[in-house]
Structures are given as structure tokens and as C-alpha cells.
Length: 333
View: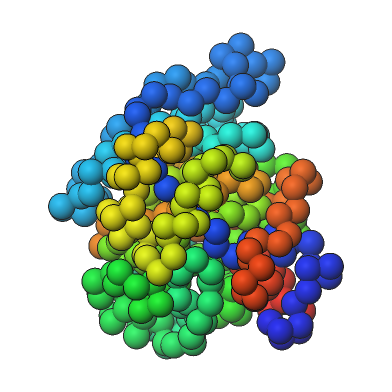
């Protein structure tokens, strides 16, 4: 099946919608998930504190943006095995982070180190895309060209001038995806989940968008995530201001005014790096910026059975199969 043949009705995983967009500055007050209590019958506990040092300073941009130090996404504690690996992870109604052993995906982390990856897969094909308010402009190129040229470029204010690899699904990438140890959730295996690999340089990232629930693990570098709940009033504000801006430049130029006007009171954000696993639910708008010179990460998109998230292109004619799980499934056909 070609990408053009990808159809929502045939592909239950086609729930990653094209980007819609939003952001904000916030206080460091913790957000408490109403589903989670310290006396959970499953043995799970919730932390009400924030984690301002989720990523070591040595992993970050030496001249960090002010928002990179803010963190109010809930930190959860879940049952673990003898090696510290989570035994299970909930599919909750609010984003959360958990600690995981850095060694959990050591094999993939070693393969994704910059030099070994170039040596082993420099001639492999990657498919960076433009990263504006809709994901478009897919371009095939050698991975070496992307890593040695595009990843080194300063991020342009105009998103159409940027290229970003954040969902490789080709057969050449299958050996890397296959060694990834997935999060232990009830739908993280089989056809209800899709694993994708992303690579980005400093300040690259995906503008605000929404899709199915996902887990994100950073193996090298660091990523800043900002999230807004479904139906938040700020989403319309963000749509009006994000057009023709990279996520980084939207943050610098547009976010302060929205924050000052009190429009971003519900935003959750944090920087994640190795040793953290982030979960966010269906339909949560989110944007990401890589805040390290070299960031390699894995996303596990899951179908939770609640919301299918079909129809995220905003009616602008974006490819309905621009979603990563959709494209992954199409490639396997």
C-alpha cells in the first residue's frame, strides 16, 4: 500500500492528527491527576511536587531558554521490578512522568549515538518533513545528509525552511525499532501501538498538534514538552498566532503575550531526558522543542480505546495519512 492509499477506515492506528498547535508560560504549581491518589489500591502513588532538575544541566543548550527550567507535569511512582523497571503504566486522563532505568534501552541508546549511527546507517534513507502547523513536505535523503547538514542548521523562523525527522517507519529502521523495550501498558504491544524514532538538532521540534495517546522516551539529549488539555480556550489563541512560525519562535514571540493575558493557565510543561518516560493522553495538544545539540528519542503511539482522534487536519487539506502510526501501518501493507 502506498501512502496515498492510506485510509482512516482501514487503519485503526491512523489517529495521529496533523498539527493544530498551542503553548504557554505558567507557574510551577503542580497539577494533580484526579485519578491518582497516594493510597491507590494498585500501589501507585503520586508526587505533588515539581521536578525543576529533570534533566542534568550538562545535557542542555549552554544558553538555555527561560522556559526550559519550568516543570509542572506530574511525577508518578509506580510498582517496579527488581531492576527498577515499571511493572505497568496507567493510561490516565492527564499527562505524567515516571523514572526509568537509563539501562532499560541501553542497546538502542548505543546504536543511536551520533557516530555509531552515522557509521552504521549513514546511507540509509530518512524522511524529514517540514514542521509547520501541518506536517507536509516529506523529503527523502540520506541520513548522513540530514545529520551532518540539516541538524546543524540554525532553526528558521519560517517552519517551511526547517526539516525534522520525528517518525521513521522505513524497513531500514526496523532493526532499531525492534530492539526498543516498549513501555509496559495494556495496549503497548501489537497492532494497537506504533513505535517511531526521531532525531533532532538544537531548537528543532514539532509545533502544536494533537493525536492519540503516546509515551515518549529520550535516549540522548533533551526535549521540552508543553501540553494543553482538550477544549482549552487557549487552543484557539494558539491557532491564531502559530501560523508561519517555528515552535521555538512562537514561544519567543507570541507566548509571552498570551501568558500575560492569563490565557495559558492550564499549560503543563517539562524538559525530559534519559531516565524519564513521559505519557500524555488522547487529544492533548502539545508542542516540543529539542533543547540539546543532539536529541534521539522514541515515541510509542497507542490506541487507548477511548478517542480515535480522527480528523486533525483542521479542514485545510493536509494528508490524512500524515500521522506516524498511519504511515507505519501503510508501509507494512
